[in-house]
Image 1 (cartoon, rainbow, N blue to C red):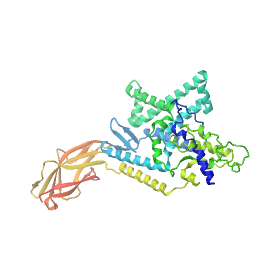
Image 2 (cartoon, rainbow, N blue to C red; image 1 turned 180 degrees about the vertical axis):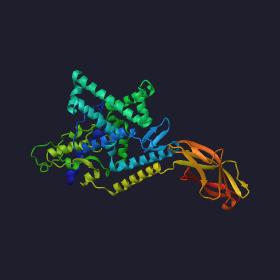
Image 3 (cartoon, one colour; image 1 turned 120 degrees about the vertical axis):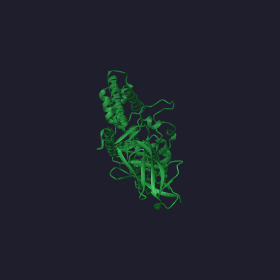
Image 4 (spheres, helix red, strand yellow; image 1 turned 90 degrees about the vertical axis):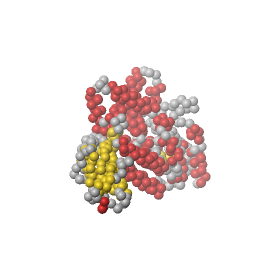
Amino acid sequence: MENNTIEAKKNSQENEEFRNNFGTMDRKGTRKWVYPKKTSGKFTKWRTLVSWGLLAFLTIIPFIKLPNGNPIFKFDFLNTEFYLFGFPFFISDFFLLAIGMITTVVFILVFTSVFGRIFCGWICPQTIFMEMVFRKIEYAIEGDRAKQMRLDNQPWNQEKIIKKTAKWFAFALVSFFITNILFSYVMGSDKLIQQITEGPFRHSETFITFLIFSALFYFVFAWFREQACTLVCPYGRLQGVLIDKKSIVVAYDFKRGESSAGRATFRKNEDRKAVNKGDCIDCKQCVVVCPTGIDIRNGLQMECVGCTACIDACDEVMEKIHLPKGLIRYTSEENIEEEKHFTFTPKMVLFSLGLIALSGIIFSFLFVRNDVEAKFLQVPGRNFKVIENNVENYYQYNLFNKTNDLKLIKIGLSSHKGEKINVIGNSQLIELPKGELKQGTISVSIPQTELNSYKEKVVFEITDQNGKSIDTYTTSFMAPY
């Protein structure tokens, strides 16, 4: 048994030449076009449902307004206007962006080390648009793998011209539609609809920008395709560093599929175990359905995006020849070598809890924040004054309204009683327009009897016109002690 296992692994990985070449390129650097065969099966159905749900979410969300009139998401970089889940964010909140980026990087590292490239196969926009939109259009117009290959190899006759023109035109329309949807997250759905209604001639700059991005999307999905994953995307290269023998990936069970005699074709009514043959019948269905043109039987490869097409293709063949499914499945190399079923290891549980904690941290930073950010600094070069029995200090205030509403702000002290605060050059109620920063100076007078130190700690509190506390700020108060 041990000898068979060693031989099986040796036969599975005996040809390592594939690691020195791209599956979509020959030795001369000429591209080999990939014609993936249409798949069906459990994972294809689930991926289709997930993809259509994400596409619907992407399309509908920009046009939904919350009761307060804010969009759910908006990223207007030109006007520095940002909304996340309906909450407005401004330049002063960009430290959240840094925290978010750090959290995202850690999330990717931890998630990939445990669950492999599930993101690439199920959630990545490149995969979803390519496989669930553009590839579907291609199947509908040109047919499945064999028909596409025949069409590309035949001369430019009437059939080829009609089908190619129809496909390219459909790709162009979809690319332009995607551009409009993505820009609705930048400029807002109201402005987008207005400019569409008024026509391209009144908004020529916007229209030209849309055409440029549409051409880019068309190039990626009509020609560049899987090379975006195999040549450009850095995530696949991170895979080799992050994934180990315990990581869950789409993998071929070489111990079950191979034998000391190598892969053997299928013969009806043959007892393969009796003649020491593995379950892989070398039908190559896992190869022809792969959208990146690799052979999953060669082991884990950078080009694999974890799309599960090979799983469904192999399961379909296994079902037809009455062998157990799961020759290709979600598993780890350790599970295959030790012939174990998939189980959640302590590492997976620990890392998953870590991912939940990280997500909670970033969301708490995003939403647990005050509507108005306040800061009080002593005016430089201005010393305290003693007036009768009171000590007076001067502070410069900075108030930033992080909402879309006009705020009426009142400044007070929550740490001391009997204080007197005078807003210099303003009424006691400060008007703070939406999204604006207001600066000014205040004088603060506190009875000497309430001061116990030459550097007394004081807590400023800002409230709205109804007396509701909005924010606090702690600083020092100078006194003659």
